[in-house]
Length: 137
Image 1: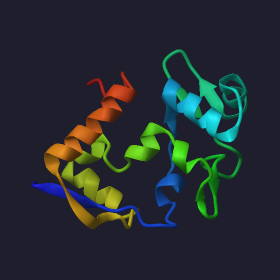
Image 2: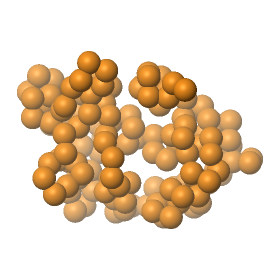
Image 3: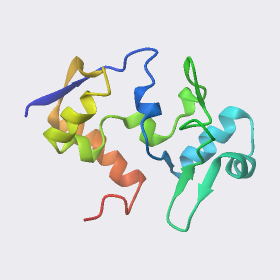
């Protein structure tokens, strides 16, 4: 595989509506809190579920994310690393079948400029760094 094509489609929120969780780094929490004008503690109390190993956004009843609105992400400039890097996640970049499966729900996959595979792998490595323990064998 020489590369992957991707261009986010304006107005599309398919990735935001997919089942699953949005994990946060401590830096994500700080950035999002500042963006919405809350202290990190206030933001965490309202929107974050913390375990000993991870932080993740709480899911509101009937939605995948508190910040998803009809026009898109309310915290787009401060969105979590996981959201920012999609679809360049290790599990998608490193598996052609998984990339094709993701493309069925994401109209941006397969469109746009060619991202050389080395660059895609490098982007995906940021996920491994941001979320240690999630990608261990």
